[in-house]
Length: 299
Image (cartoon, rainbow, N blue to C red; front, side, top):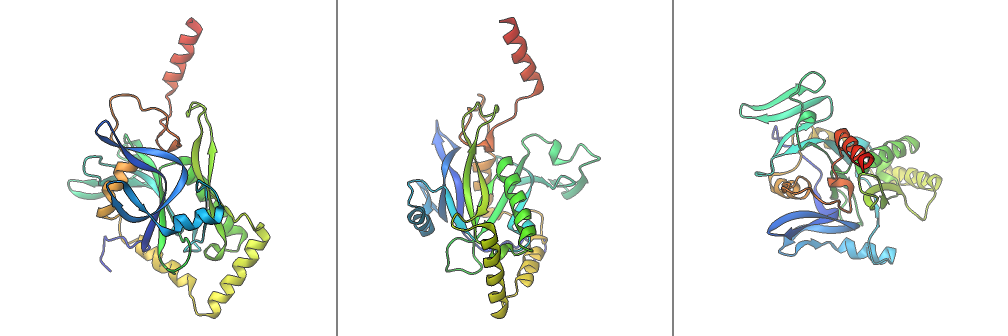
C-alpha cells in the first residue's frame, strides 16, 4: 500500500442538499430543502442525476426528496462518518490543516507538522475560516456490494446528529450497523442566528415502515445470513480502518477544488445573507450582541 495515500471506500455517487450556482460572475454555494443524489460526472448545468434519485422519488411519491433509504458499509461508527475540523486554501482548493480537537496536522513549507491543540496557538481550531467537515459513507439501492455514496457537510447540526445516531444505533443493535435498515431524513429548525428562517440538517433514523425492535431483529437475521455465506464484516472494517489511517487528507486531488468551492467559498466584501442551511451561517460575536442591545436601549 502506498504510504501517505488515504484509501477510502469506492465512491459511486454523491448526496447533497445544495449546489453551486453562478452569481455576479462568482460561483457560490446555494443550499436547498431537498436531497439530490448524483453521479460523479458534471457538465455546465451541474452534477448529473444518479438513477437512484428517481428511484427514491418514486418510492416516496413526493415532489421533493427528503428521505433516502440507506444501509451503512461498516459496523464501526467512526468508519461510516469521518469528521474533523478543517481549513482549506480557497485559491488552490487544497487543505491547509485538519484537527480532531486534540492534535492538528498542518501543511507547511517544511512539509507536514503535528501540533497539540491544547498547548499551542498553531492548532487549526484557532485559525480563521476553520469549520467542522464531515463525510458520511452510505449504500443506496443495490448493484454494488462495496460501492458507496458520499454525503459531505460542514453543518454542526448534521455532524452532531449523525454522530449521535450512529453511536446510539451501534449500542442498541449490538454493533450491527452494517445490517440495520436505516434512512437519511432531512429535518429543519430555526434559530436566532438564522433570523428565524428554516435551516436544514441531515438525520439518521430507522426506516419509516419499521419499529426499532423490528429493525434490530432484521439486522441480526441479515448478519447471520452474511456469516453463513462467508461475508467477513470485521475484516472489511479493519481493511477500511487501515486505509483511512494511511494518510492525512482523505479527499482526492480531483475532489479538492469542488469541496473548497462548495464548502469553503471565498467571502465577498459584503456580509453574506442568511441561507437555507446552517452550513455557512456565522455566529455573531458577544460584542455585536451587546452593541445591538445598546442601540435598542438608546432608541
